[in-house]
Image (tube, rainbow, N blue to C red; front, side, top):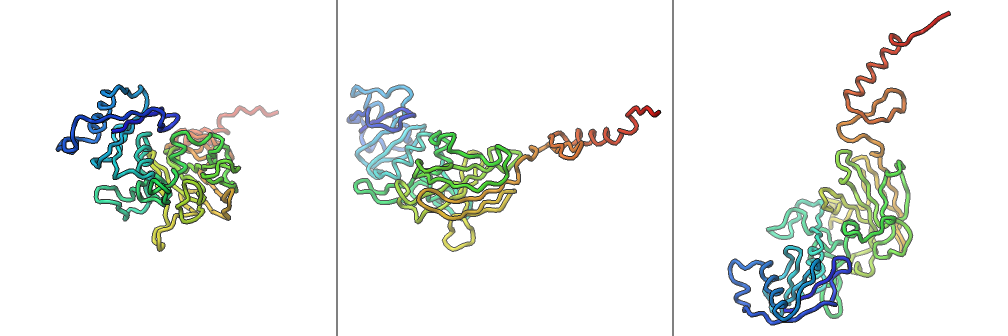
Length: 321
């Protein structure tokens, strides 16, 4: 059994590595009631018995030399020879970083009998497990695909100045060039957030541009992708009812209009209009005490303001003469 660990900042590293022979047998590891977490603990215990201790705060990946079980559990990862390819290993290691699965809006898609509708149906994102646009590596099988812009942003791997939130500055419409996630040296935002739900600022659309290169070498072509993010889960928007269910590259819904133009080596042209800018949050309305009065108040306060304004003539002292 090999055991590796690393800090959450630098990623999974080979700098700290220990090899140990486990005292238990393969049959014992497969015994009823044995869990993935306990198998990982057995590997850690074997490494500790061999003189190695997992440093506090580090993440752990245990690798066995026989096929028993593979996957993530409790922020730790277990891999056996049946999972020794880049796509699977990277997917499970991303779970170790706290990333969840990605979905599509096609609720008729079921990857497995135990999976939720739409789960694992974003082939442009590593968190859809083995249902991704991968590529073949020379030595380690399926190379997988890169992470979506949402997942990169979720872990803080996108600089703040490369993420644009539409409407944050009051501008409703923008035509811009979105840089490829795979070419961060290109100018422009790497992720555009488009909030549209006044009741939930964390319910929004995302726009990203993926280029067929690097870890995205296996995607069919350069393309703009749109996701809807809700409750911390990204959902790929597909063109439902269209043959092949291609990803949506345009949108007109919930007060948001997104259109896509040309795509190239350094960016994709996108125009976004967000008509939800400067709306009141759910439960509040414009006061409208005078034209252009965009103060958000309760309905009762607006009613009172109108009633007060209606009493202007009766309440103002006028001195003639």
